[in-house]
Length: 304
Ligand SMILES: [Fe+2]
Ligand SMILES: [Fe+2]
Image (cartoon, rainbow, N blue to C red; front, side):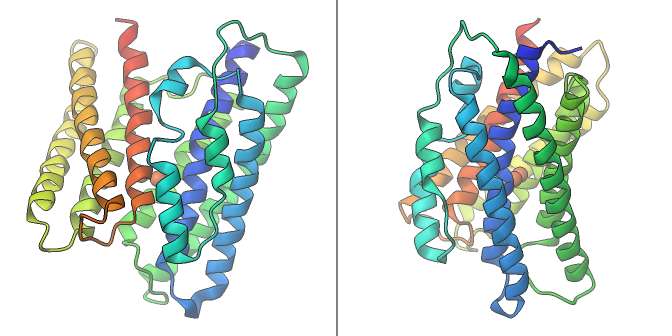
């Protein structure tokens, strides 16, 4: 059972991370759809705005409330986020609320924070609204994917990546439902590691598939990560109580490495030094997802 302070803190950190992830998924889908499907582009844009509003409200409530580990993790924004948003907005014409990023860069933690009585109720309501929005975004993503799978729709996003976007939304939903029931989300560390290993492996495969064929070195490095995470996923799935720490440490090392790779890829894309179909916000997005996973792993290992 979660005490109120922990419930508030964990909820706000989860929404800060995932509301941004969800709105960026809509930006990527908008950019990948064709003008013939402008109805879907508009729907994606509306969902993007709804998640921006949710994120804005979350940011207002978060200052001084979130943990220092969350602030330090760079899972909400990185030093590249603002520039990446700027570039993608000017390249695609899709509006991106950069004020949110500026506010998030200023977020602080206060160690002596006391949870005011009305904050818990406010966060509970916020979580409920988030749950409704996530259900909506899952429906939208599933509709698009089913049309693609039936060859009724064309998009520049791989079907496997659309599946990945759905999995992330479902993970967010499950975590929020747990919190609303005052349960600690991601309590089963091995199941959480299985989820994130699979996500990291997917990222490596997407990067490999979206690079220009001339980028042989980056292609090979992305391929190495895809193989590494496939192996780690298998080890994690078969882990036992006896070797769980060893497996978790290996996952942490590999995730730190892929985060470094994603970080230099983001820099390279922003400097226009990499030929690919990857936009810099997508590179920054997958970097933040690695940063979140690193924090989860470190928090678990701290107790051992
Ligand atoms: Fe994502
Ligand atoms: Fe992802």
